[in-house]
Image 1 (spheres, helix red, strand yellow):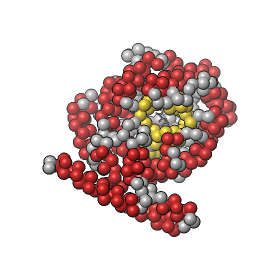
Image 2 (cartoon, rainbow, N blue to C red):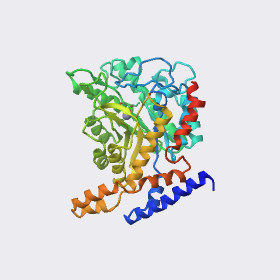
Image 3 (spheres, rainbow, N blue to C red):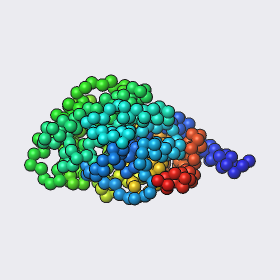
Image 4 (spheres, rainbow, N blue to C red):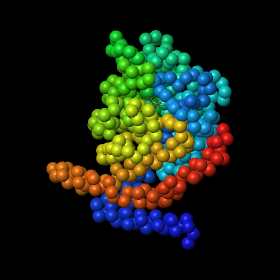
Amino acid sequence: MGLESRQSAAIEEAGRLANERYAACGVDVEAAMTTLATVPVSLHCWQGDDVQGFESTGDAIGGGLAVTGSYPGRARTPEELKSDLQKALSLIPGRHRLNLHACYGEFGGKKVDRNEIEPEHFAGWVDWARDQKLGLDFNPTCFAHPKAADGFTLAHADKAIRDFWIEHCTRCRQIGAGFGEALGTPCVTNVWVPDGFKDTPADRMGARARLAESLDEVFAEPLPREHLLDAVESKLFGIGAESCTVGSHEFYLGYAITRETLLCLDAGHFHPTETISDKISSALLYLPEILLHVSRGVRWDSDHVVTLNDDLLAITREIVATGDISRVHIGLDFFDASINRVAAWVIGTRNLLKGVLLGLLEPPAIRAAEAGGDTTARLALQEEAKSLPFGSVWDQYCLRLGVPVGSDWLEVVRGYERDVTSKR
Ligand code: RNT
Ligand code: ZN
């Protein structure tokens, strides 16, 4: 037996023992792995190039966003970004999605302003996604543009500027619906605008009323839900917009419920002790579906790579605990330019999937203890569940889905770095 097959046999044997251990806790590991394989994660294209896009206008990112780090090898062209994504996806178990921003169109060196984008600028992405068997999601890009430089877009006091961004977002919905139709899976198109005040506003209501009115124009055209799912994303603050964000959580919660859009909850967009895990069940009582931007804020909305920490585990177990994972569209939203960018995708996405798997492996006795009023047992079982042999199930899952087990994937990324990204 060669080294590799000996290792595979050991992983399978450890998996068999782990499955028995879980079975004794009432958990069906096979069923958990089967379910996990149906959960798509939408990988955000913008981790690959530090949120730069392909417009080559040189406009600063703005919008209250910041990317730090100067690790070599960022993708500079659609070809490079596609190749990096393929490498990352080959190291992540399961079938997933790609989340594109409008500024990642293939403009062929031509200046195409945001109010001029057309489906044709994304045809190459659709062909590639079809080839790679990926669904596509989409986002208008309402930042990194002279008409967003003063921090306002859809809520701008100037009607001409509002109209410009309304046109951009309207086109984005049409492009998104085209993705959904072409690929046979609805495209979640998420509107996030940076609009906010650096210092204490005198008229919050006016700005919010303008935002609502602009959004109503954007969403006016009915497009089939089997092609397009509209989402709106709230935020607490951004750099340079510390005092008031027009599209706050309350604003969008009300908007999503009344206009029947998805609500996007970004893990970095709330007060530091507030968690999105606790919001999922509330949102799903009033909305059929929601979108998550899973991120990791360190001291602020810093968009660090997602790690397998308590926050993530609380989010993923809630997604499972609601009883219908398909109502929660899982997207990632982080951008770290200080480490290998392909590795960042792989680390964050594998962690997200590990979290969902842990949620699926939760012993049912925990819920039963709570239902029976035994909160002592609930706590005892929650804590004991933490040392169940989860790692052996995850290894087994990776082995079965044909992706590297453990940290073996890092060697593959290193090889790609040596041969490809370090030469950019
Ligand atoms: C910004 C929002 C938004 C962006 C992306 C690039 O704070 O989180 O989702 O990160 O659109
Ligand atoms: Zn986000």
